Image (cartoon, rainbow, N blue to C red; front, side, top):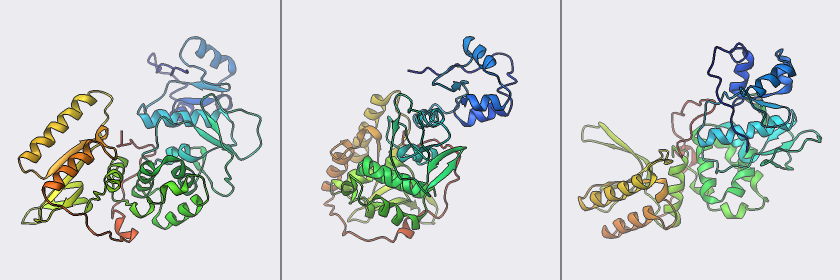
Length: 353
């Protein structure tokens, strides 16, 4: 397993403070031999930096400068995609979930195996842990941060059929919410997905797509509740007082028979530390909220699942209120597009983790 080179923390480095350093930062700390030579760095200079432990060699023809800013799960996965593309040469094209990561779509399943296709014949083999795909990419290749990837429409069509319905809904919602995919392109995604293996498993997903959901975690929770016959009344519900003052906005909720709401909030914070304790606190808080007549209950990622604590808690509460599922309704997609799209950082943090 390749270990990241340690960040250069000695005297200011004229190499990494140059345009070459800027390129390395854009490529998650990675540089090709050709890029080094183009910026005046000889093989001897590179070899000495590696020998001194300042840089590392993750694959043939590549160096790792240690300039890695994003160490989130998505950042690590995206770096793996960049490494795979650079090691396979200029004809390598990111496809499927690898392309979605480069485009900035949230909710790509982890761990990720980098996937790439070739626009031209090559003898280079993908690096260990990467996968070479034989996808048709003609006419659908774009440049993202200096790397090649299939466009978001094709990348989604390639990915959702293999991801399963829960992940598929999160990816489609995220692509629309972040304006990476336009509403009118959704039919193109569905058309390109038609005939691919696995497309039948996501047939029920298309009517559920809603760009108002702000994170994949909300999409996954919604799908779990829908699958359990507990489809929420609405999502992104704004609550105001008698004077029209906005008090809160909840991820989703149920309109009860007495005219009040049972609100559901999803916490998308990172749970690498303290996950068990946090989950216990949320469960205890929900018990107290329900006992005290409060209308807001909160859940974390570990509580999702078609028969997980979230579904069981909500089902129990709705039964005590004699709640009945609303009649299915058809929403025009335009009504499910948020009026103000979020600004897109080049590589945004994924709120689902």
